[in-house]
Amino acid sequence: RKPLLLFTGSSAFFSSSTNLYPPCIKTQYACNLSRKPEIWYRMRNLNEAEAERLQKFVDEARTFAFRTVNVADSKAGLESLEILAEQELSSGNEFLAARMYQELAHVHKTQDLETLKHFVLSEGYICPQPRVWSRIWLGFVRLHKASNNEDPPREKWPLLLSGWDQASEDDLRQRFMTQLDYMDQCGRIEWAIKQFRKLEPKHWYVGW
Image 1 (cartoon, helix red, strand yellow):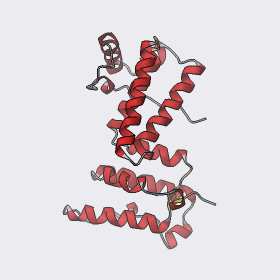
Image 2: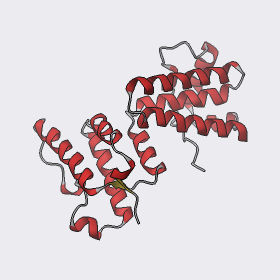
Image 3: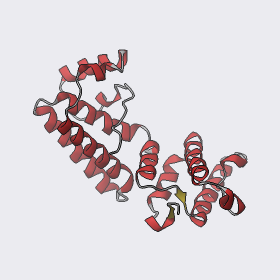
Image 4: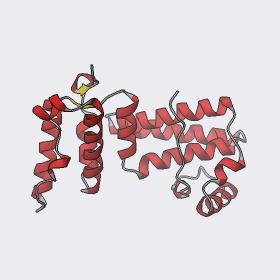
Protein backbone atom coordinates (compact mmCIF):
# COMPACT_ATOMS: atom_id res chain seq x y z
CA ARG A 1 0.00 0.00 0.00
CA LYS A 2 1.12 3.56 -0.66
CA PRO A 3 1.76 5.67 2.44
CA LEU A 4 -0.92 8.13 3.42
CA LEU A 5 -0.26 11.79 2.80
CA LEU A 6 1.78 13.56 5.46
CA PHE A 7 0.31 16.92 6.34
CA THR A 8 2.32 20.09 6.56
CA GLY A 9 0.17 21.82 9.11
CA SER A 10 -0.67 24.66 6.76
CA SER A 11 -4.06 26.32 7.06
CA ALA A 12 -3.90 27.42 3.42
CA PHE A 13 -6.68 25.06 2.42
CA PHE A 14 -9.23 27.35 4.06
CA SER A 15 -8.43 30.21 1.71
CA SER A 16 -10.38 28.79 -1.25
CA SER A 17 -12.83 31.14 -2.91
CA THR A 18 -15.51 28.46 -2.90
CA ASN A 19 -18.11 28.22 -0.15
CA LEU A 20 -17.41 24.61 0.72
CA TYR A 21 -16.03 25.27 4.21
CA PRO A 22 -18.47 26.23 7.02
CA PRO A 23 -17.16 29.04 9.29
CA CYS A 24 -17.02 26.80 12.39
CA ILE A 25 -14.80 24.28 10.60
CA LYS A 26 -12.71 27.03 9.02
CA THR A 27 -12.03 28.82 12.31
CA GLN A 28 -11.37 25.73 14.43
CA TYR A 29 -9.01 23.99 12.02
CA ALA A 30 -7.16 27.09 10.86
CA CYS A 31 -6.39 27.97 14.47
CA ASN A 32 -5.36 24.47 15.47
CA LEU A 33 -3.18 23.87 12.42
CA SER A 34 -1.36 27.17 12.65
CA ARG A 35 -0.50 26.63 16.30
CA LYS A 36 0.38 22.96 16.46
CA PRO A 37 0.34 20.71 13.36
CA GLU A 38 0.52 17.45 15.32
CA ILE A 39 -2.88 18.17 16.83
CA TRP A 40 -4.29 16.54 13.69
CA TYR A 41 -3.12 13.17 14.91
CA ARG A 42 -4.42 13.64 18.45
CA MET A 43 -7.85 14.90 17.44
CA ARG A 44 -8.92 11.69 15.76
CA ASN A 45 -7.49 8.84 13.73
CA LEU A 46 -9.25 7.72 10.57
CA ASN A 47 -10.79 4.27 10.66
CA GLU A 48 -9.87 1.75 7.99
CA ALA A 49 -12.74 2.63 5.65
CA GLU A 50 -12.01 6.36 5.93
CA ALA A 51 -8.30 5.79 5.36
CA GLU A 52 -9.07 3.86 2.19
CA ARG A 53 -11.34 6.65 0.95
CA LEU A 54 -8.64 9.21 1.70
CA GLN A 55 -5.98 7.18 -0.13
CA LYS A 56 -8.23 6.86 -3.18
CA PHE A 57 -8.95 10.60 -2.99
CA VAL A 58 -5.21 11.42 -2.86
CA ASP A 59 -4.46 9.17 -5.84
CA GLU A 60 -7.27 10.67 -7.90
CA ALA A 61 -6.30 14.25 -6.99
CA ARG A 62 -2.73 13.69 -8.15
CA THR A 63 -3.90 11.91 -11.27
CA PHE A 64 -6.12 14.84 -12.24
CA ALA A 65 -3.39 17.34 -11.33
CA PHE A 66 -0.51 15.70 -13.19
CA ARG A 67 -1.48 12.82 -15.44
CA THR A 68 -4.50 14.48 -17.07
CA VAL A 69 -3.11 16.38 -20.07
CA ASN A 70 -6.29 18.25 -20.99
CA VAL A 71 -6.57 21.32 -18.73
CA ALA A 72 -10.37 21.35 -18.80
CA ASP A 73 -10.54 17.68 -17.80
CA SER A 74 -8.03 18.29 -15.02
CA LYS A 75 -10.05 21.20 -13.67
CA ALA A 76 -13.32 19.28 -13.88
CA GLY A 77 -11.78 16.31 -12.08
CA LEU A 78 -10.49 18.43 -9.21
CA GLU A 79 -13.84 20.19 -8.94
CA SER A 80 -15.56 16.81 -8.67
CA LEU A 81 -13.24 15.96 -5.78
CA GLU A 82 -14.19 19.21 -4.04
CA ILE A 83 -17.81 18.08 -4.27
CA LEU A 84 -16.84 14.71 -2.80
CA ALA A 85 -15.11 16.44 0.12
CA GLU A 86 -18.22 18.58 0.65
CA GLN A 87 -20.36 15.43 0.77
CA GLU A 88 -18.09 13.94 3.45
CA LEU A 89 -18.41 17.13 5.45
CA SER A 90 -22.20 17.16 5.07
CA SER A 91 -22.26 13.56 6.31
CA GLY A 92 -20.48 14.57 9.51
CA ASN A 93 -17.06 13.27 8.52
CA GLU A 94 -15.37 16.61 9.14
CA PHE A 95 -11.94 15.16 9.91
CA LEU A 96 -11.83 13.18 6.68
CA ALA A 97 -13.23 16.13 4.72
CA ALA A 98 -10.62 18.50 6.15
CA ARG A 99 -7.82 16.18 5.09
CA MET A 100 -9.35 15.98 1.63
CA TYR A 101 -9.43 19.77 1.41
CA GLN A 102 -5.81 19.93 2.48
CA GLU A 103 -4.79 17.48 -0.22
CA LEU A 104 -6.49 19.65 -2.85
CA ALA A 105 -4.65 22.71 -1.55
CA HIS A 106 -1.40 20.75 -1.52
CA VAL A 107 -1.87 19.87 -5.20
CA HIS A 108 -2.37 23.51 -6.18
CA LYS A 109 0.11 25.13 -3.80
CA THR A 110 3.22 23.14 -4.68
CA GLN A 111 2.99 23.88 -8.41
CA ASP A 112 2.73 20.14 -8.95
CA LEU A 113 6.40 19.51 -8.06
CA GLU A 114 5.54 17.01 -5.33
CA THR A 115 2.77 15.62 -7.53
CA LEU A 116 5.28 14.98 -10.30
CA LYS A 117 7.64 13.22 -7.89
CA HIS A 118 4.76 11.17 -6.52
CA PHE A 119 3.76 10.16 -10.05
CA VAL A 120 7.29 9.13 -11.03
CA LEU A 121 7.82 7.04 -7.90
CA SER A 122 4.34 5.49 -7.85
CA GLU A 123 4.69 4.37 -11.48
CA GLY A 124 8.08 2.80 -10.79
CA TYR A 125 9.88 5.16 -13.16
CA ILE A 126 13.56 5.90 -12.55
CA CYS A 127 14.17 8.69 -15.05
CA PRO A 128 13.38 9.49 -18.69
CA GLN A 129 15.05 7.44 -21.39
CA PRO A 130 18.43 8.96 -22.40
CA ARG A 131 17.38 10.73 -25.61
CA VAL A 132 14.21 12.10 -24.06
CA TRP A 133 16.06 13.13 -20.91
CA SER A 134 18.68 14.97 -22.98
CA ARG A 135 16.09 16.72 -25.15
CA ILE A 136 14.06 18.06 -22.23
CA TRP A 137 17.14 19.08 -20.27
CA LEU A 138 18.68 20.98 -23.21
CA GLY A 139 15.37 22.76 -23.68
CA PHE A 140 15.51 23.84 -20.04
CA VAL A 141 19.14 25.00 -20.45
CA ARG A 142 18.18 27.18 -23.43
CA LEU A 143 15.42 28.84 -21.41
CA HIS A 144 17.74 29.20 -18.43
CA LYS A 145 20.48 30.91 -20.44
CA ALA A 146 17.98 33.13 -22.25
CA SER A 147 17.35 34.79 -18.89
CA ASN A 148 21.02 35.79 -18.69
CA ASN A 149 21.92 32.87 -16.47
CA GLU A 150 25.06 30.77 -16.69
CA ASP A 151 25.03 27.08 -17.57
CA PRO A 152 23.64 24.90 -14.75
CA PRO A 153 26.31 23.18 -12.60
CA ARG A 154 27.62 19.96 -14.08
CA GLU A 155 26.23 17.98 -11.14
CA LYS A 156 22.72 18.91 -12.33
CA TRP A 157 23.11 17.52 -15.85
CA PRO A 158 21.64 14.14 -16.89
CA LEU A 159 23.80 11.05 -16.52
CA LEU A 160 24.24 10.12 -20.17
CA LEU A 161 26.71 8.16 -22.33
CA SER A 162 29.42 6.75 -20.05
CA GLY A 163 27.65 8.29 -17.06
CA TRP A 164 24.56 6.26 -17.88
CA ASP A 165 26.53 3.03 -18.25
CA GLN A 166 28.33 3.50 -14.94
CA ALA A 167 25.39 4.80 -12.89
CA SER A 168 23.21 2.63 -10.69
CA GLU A 169 19.43 2.93 -10.78
CA ASP A 170 19.58 4.85 -7.49
CA ASP A 171 22.12 7.26 -9.04
CA LEU A 172 19.86 7.88 -12.02
CA ARG A 173 16.76 8.43 -9.90
CA GLN A 174 18.59 10.75 -7.51
CA ARG A 175 19.99 12.82 -10.37
CA PHE A 176 16.54 13.17 -11.92
CA MET A 177 14.98 14.25 -8.61
CA THR A 178 17.83 16.72 -8.10
CA GLN A 179 17.09 18.17 -11.52
CA LEU A 180 13.41 18.63 -10.69
CA ASP A 181 14.33 20.52 -7.52
CA TYR A 182 16.77 22.67 -9.50
CA MET A 183 14.17 23.47 -12.16
CA ASP A 184 11.78 24.47 -9.40
CA GLN A 185 14.41 26.77 -7.83
CA CYS A 186 14.95 28.38 -11.24
CA GLY A 187 11.23 29.04 -11.67
CA ARG A 188 10.84 26.59 -14.56
CA ILE A 189 8.97 23.73 -12.91
CA GLU A 190 5.70 24.52 -14.67
CA TRP A 191 7.49 24.35 -18.04
CA ALA A 192 9.12 21.06 -17.03
CA ILE A 193 5.84 19.53 -15.93
CA LYS A 194 4.30 20.30 -19.32
CA GLN A 195 7.17 18.43 -20.98
CA PHE A 196 6.90 15.39 -18.73
CA ARG A 197 3.10 15.27 -19.12
CA LYS A 198 3.61 14.56 -22.80
CA LEU A 199 5.74 11.46 -22.22
CA GLU A 200 4.38 8.00 -22.86
CA PRO A 201 5.35 4.99 -20.73
CA LYS A 202 7.90 3.93 -23.35
CA HIS A 203 9.76 7.20 -22.80
CA TRP A 204 10.54 6.33 -19.16
CA TYR A 205 13.34 4.10 -17.92
CA VAL A 206 12.14 1.48 -15.42
CA GLY A 207 15.35 -0.50 -14.92
CA TRP A 208 16.16 -4.07 -15.79
